[in-house]
Image (cartoon, rainbow, N blue to C red; front, side, top):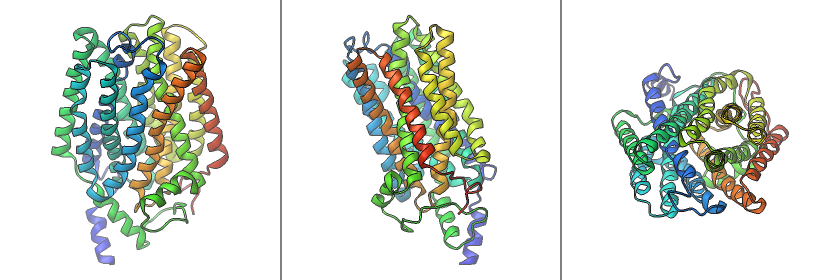
Length: 435
């Protein structure tokens, strides 16, 4: 047993530097995933009424495509985690890219908003399978002390892609028309990403298996994580799901925070472009304001993820929830492109503090034998927040007669969710709170 494990230590080396080529390929992949998501963020909601026939004031109809996206992506995150432990990370990622192929055509030839909703269902499949795998694959390759940095780099690359796509598609829509611009952009991104997956991405599941065997043999070094005691060595799907959802207070508080923070992203996706369009901004102007949110979120994660490796996970999560909620409220308290850009930047920095840190916290206390499932279930709850958030935003806007109510509702939800983490979650970093 010892000689076999020694051989695995040599064959499966961990750390970003030791796996830099594959790590870089995965960063490119998640950038393409972000581009695919971002191409629907500026043009589609802003022109829902004029281009795709959504009646003015139909708040539930407007939010329908994000509701569909959230429920589908959340479910596929759950499926992706379990699938990747059976068939490998690379195959799941490639299936995700195949699911994205029809999306540009559906937007191009959509006769009604229902086609946009259907295209967003496929977008949810794509995002659930591909983004989950970029995150899980990087965590397979890196060490416990690099988890915050790893998630930070992953989300930096992905949301930088979201921001770039929002701006580029705004200009392409102006130059070539909204449908044509999205068609050109979408086909280019999906074709390149699928090709790169086939040619250069390696499956990282063997690294996770080797790490699990080292844990079993007691050969892992460094601080011991506070793994949940009330779970089997090789747990089934339901056992991991219940642990993540309510049986472990830390996992449950992290999952609810992930769900609620997606209310902000649903707001930015659906209501923010409409709000800015109603206040006279051009498509390009909307792209830049919404892009500030994405750029600050993306770029800041380069630092905030690594910061959590030093100061812990709990403080950045709580501060990020409250700061992000404050940024949402700021949108309503001023006027003008500069003010809205500042508000978007505050929201983006709050997201940068909490977003990679939540995933890193899950990774801290999830055993490598079921880490893929734990990440998938956390991402299930988190991205279900798109659907639940959009549903609640549409309902609140309909009840109170305007999208402004959605901003206040989201801000309040973020403050309340941060308080839950404060009260229910202990520090998860093994060095700061070892078993």
